[in-house]
Structure formats: structure tokens, C-alpha cells
Image (cartoon, rainbow, N blue to C red):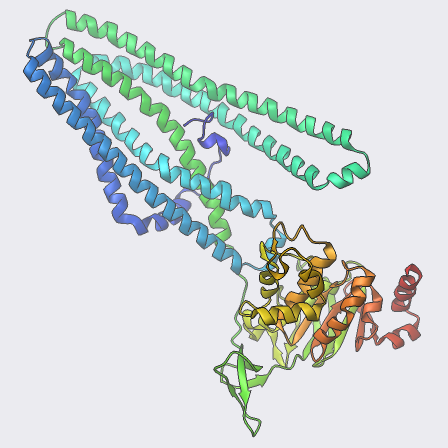
Length: 622
């Protein structure tokens, strides 16, 4: 189909940068279905042979049976033609069915590999690529690959075979008439190239315009409350009208050229048919070997030979768009995965009467770090930073010479203005990012020597931005530890102070949440986030603005639960409410990536420094 239908115009024409390399990678996926593809090729040749052979039977049908009046022979010939066309239809159905199987399995594997790859990519990759950009790999890009494999791949080969076979048969029938047809075909190719190039350019403009319209609509929908608060409905309408008008103009031009293609090809085809009919009629009337049956066959070939040109030009565009889409998918799949050279793993251990540790076969009890040589180091939660320097971009340092320690069971707080580097420090404990210099140790082990899945399993994190998955309340809490029992889920909720509001939900713990928990208040969503961390039961806990979305009354209700949750654990707390960190063992005051003050609450207040300014400012607000 052309740009006006459901072909390449729907996504906008895009040329691949590395055609050969991308095709080679795509063929590795198709190579798993080599036998299917060989059968598809065989069926394509058979289908084309039946199409061309069925047309050729017109010549003897007219010359040998209709003109002499041999009706029994005519009946037999019609039966043969019917058989040939039925066989051709069966072959067409066969290769189409096989290509659907090959294409859907190929794109399913491509989609699965892409998803697996994304799980291995570092957070830095997602920081530099928007969610919409990555989602387009699963939707537009893989969809164009699927469309090309479903239809265009086999159709392109079929058109090429039909065109070559028909043109060869025309040369055999009458070379003179074939020259007339070729002359018109050259004109058709020129028209296809001229119209197609303009059509692609305007469809690219249309795709850009529709992207701007959709992005504007999405932004306005998300910001409806702000629009209404500031009474900017008219400004929103005007902004939409400008973008909508640009989209309308681009789409009009694109559809005009897309609509011109088929009528132009049709009229040129009729001109070709009329010229052939006139010249062929004179040849047939003049006698000789060119008879009425030959003219009928040649006219049939004239109609058949022009169709593949238009179809092939459109299928080539679809295939090029698909290769460009596959190229974008492979760009993600070839991105550098998150580095993980760690060999120290987290294991369950038991302790005998003499205090010797050994691995436990049951999934309960204490944890320990297992080194490559088999040595077991008890997991205590001792975290230390030693002269750590870090920047998301190596040219811009975020943290400068950070040194700190948190002994097992201690509560360490980070305070400071926005952008001071508080969250960055906790992200480095998880190894979401790699430091430029210095070391971070966990129970005396460099975190770079610990496998990332083991490291993160030992850490519980309550993020400032909550994210709830579609499912029950219990499932969202259980996300902290997937094998947790219902009793453990409820215990975690009670610990976080979430049990009371959960039981007032329509179905309690079995209430279905959707839309990121849109039917809950921000405070309730954060309570579930805290319950999820409690369910994980980690030795080290990171609270990143964990109570920033909870009102003062709710905060007091969960204070005891949070104290129980933090008991016996090493805890890193980031908070704007300084009242929540007063009981911290040590408070680190950060400014511009440097620790400028450290000590407990009383020490820092006595210093009358930055912490004193922050705290007294908060007190005035209270």
C-alpha cells in the first residue's frame, strides 16, 4: 500500500544509515527459520509460474479452441486454466501463511531481546534517553519490521518474478509491441520517482507535525490543573491551533502527492493498453504469425507488467523504513550494558556452636558475603566512602572528595539545598553509577567486587518518587520480596503504618491498583513504598525524602513504625524536614558536592553554621 494507506507513509519514510550491517543482523534472526524461508521462495516461484502460465494459456485458448469452435477442447482448456490458477492461489496462501509465522516469531524474539537488553542497561542510559524515545522502539520501529516481513518481503520478490517473467514472455510474443510497452514503462518510472520523492518529503514533514501536536496535547492534558489555576485556557487553544494548522498543511500536501500516484499510474497504464491494442490490432489484421490469441495474451501481459512497478516502489519504501526501524532497535541492543565484574555474592548462612559460619540450604537466617575463595564475611551493614569523586559527566564533577562512614546500626543523615549531591551519594552505594576515583566499601569489601544483584538485594530503598505497579496492594508490597507470605506482607504494612488505611480500601489488601495508584493519595502511595522496603527486610536502608509527601499527622503516625524498621539497621536518610533527622548518629551537611559540616544535631546547632541556618529557617516555617 502507498503512503495514503497503511504503508510507509504511516510512519514517515526514513532511510537507514547502515543498510548492509542492519540487514546482516536482521538475517541472523531470520536465519532461525531458514527451512521456512526456503519453502517460501519455492512457493513464490510456483505462484509466479502459475500466474504467468495461466496468462499464457489465453493464446491457445483463443487460437486453437475458440476460433475453430472446438467446444470440448475449450472446456478441457478452461479446466486446465482453473487448475493452474487454483494451484497459484494455494501457493500464495502458503507463502503468506509461512511469512506470518516467520515474521511474528522474529519480531517477538526481537522484542524479547530488546526488553532483556534494557534490563541490563545502566541508569545513565535512561537519564539520556526519554521514555517516549525508548517506547517508540517497541511500537513504531518493531511494527515497521513486522509489517515489512509480513507483506513487503514476499511481495517484493513476487513482483520482481512476475515483472521479469511477463516481460520475457512479451519479448517472445512480439518484440515490436514490447518496445512500445517499455517506452511507457520508462515514463511510469520517471513519474514514480518524481512523485515519490516529493511524497516522502511531505510525509516526513507530516510526521514531525503530528509529533508536535501529540506532544502538545499530552502536555496540556497533564497540566490541566495548572492551566485552569492560571486561567490560560485561551492561550492553550491558541497554541494548539498553531500546531494543528501546521499539521493540516503538511498532511494536505502529503496526501495530495500520495493521491496523485495511483491515478497517474492508472492513466499511464490505460494509455499503454490503448497503444498496444491499436498497434497489435494492425499486426493481427495484417496476417502472419501474430494472431488474435497472441494479441489477447499480449494485452493481458500489458496489464500485468505495469502493476509490479508501482507495487515494488512502495514495497521498497516499506522495507527501507523497516531496516531503519531495525537499525534503531539494534542501536539500543548494542549499547554498553551495566558493568558488573563483581564475584562476591550474598548467601544465607548458619552458625554452629563454635561460631563458625557455613552456607545454609534454607531461605532464612543470617546473610553473609561469599568471596571467590569461599571465605564468608558476615553482612553487618558497615558502609564507608573514602575520598570519592564522582560526576555524571566526567567533565563536570558532582561530588568532591567525599569521605564518611556508617557503622552497623547507625543512622546517617544528609541535608543540604537542592542539587547539593545528597541523592547522588545514595545512588553510588547501589552502584547505579560508577565513581571516577576513591573507594566505597561494604563490610570491608569494595562494592565493585560485589555482584550487583547481591549488592542491591542487601539494600532497601524508599525513593522520593513512588511508583506502584498495576496489581493488588499486596502485590505492590510484595515487590520488595517476591516470595513473602501474606502474613509477612501484612506485618510489613503494619510496620510502616499502612495497615489501617489498607483495611479501609474496598477490598483491603486485594484492592487492585492501576494508573500508578492514582486512586490513592500521595501520602498513602508513599506509605506503600515504605511497606515495600520493610517487606524486603534489608540490613541497610536508604530513605530518599521518604516522608516528603506525607503530612505532619501521617508522619507522626508512622514515626514509631519507621523507628522499628530502622532498628538494628544501617540507615541513610535524605530529608528536607530536619525534624526527621534530629536523632541521627551523624548528620552530613552538603553544599555543591562537598561535606561542609558533620556531627550530631546538638553539635551542628552549637556551631551556628549552615545546618543551624537550615534548621532555624525550618523552625520558623513550623
